[in-house]
Length: 297
View (spheres, rainbow, N blue to C red):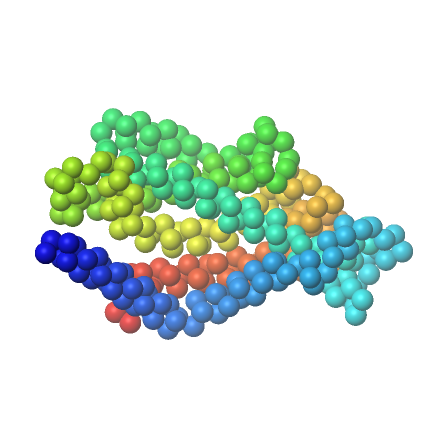
């Protein structure tokens, strides 16, 4: 009989989770700007995944002196740079590096910061106080300056930029999850799990995090756009991904000398950064509204 009750309870939980997801999706769909952002992002993602099919990577790094600084045309849709490299090829292949840094830094940062914040919020006490003071010290340094300092210390490479962006953002994610966990730990189902003898780590992973994850989903979605812009900024000052590897910020850095005479060299990489960040921000706004229980739409 008890087994039947457990099965019924599990089925009820599944139905509840499904209905919650359906309700979130229904609210999200009603936000036209959020849907536009999602469609725009999936177009960018599709082009990135099919970059090798659309145009060879060699085209993006091959220097052709006779085709230097040519404007947009049928043979070069976005024109060529000062080395004769095709800008269209460099932008769609550079999207891989930019999206890798953006999504990679957010995913790793959310994982580390989320687990640390959940442990701090759940355990509290001296451990929480010590960790929070350390993170407060890190947050006193502007994230852009911290990322630049880390890259300067480790050297210029894709993985060092990824690591720098991750470290600079961990404190923010940790604080968001911690504040959400503090609002969950006093709930009756947490006390019930305690009384059943469940270990702390299991309670954190199975009960605390799933019920405190909403704010971090919204924050991480919007943080991807910020991470892409920050990574482009690091490359723009010459400390990020190094040429000839294509990367949007590095392309802007190379184009700054020619932007007056050849504005297309700045225009297309700038639009790539802007549209990608815009798509993530619009989706983040839509998710925030869809997950907000106070909004009855």
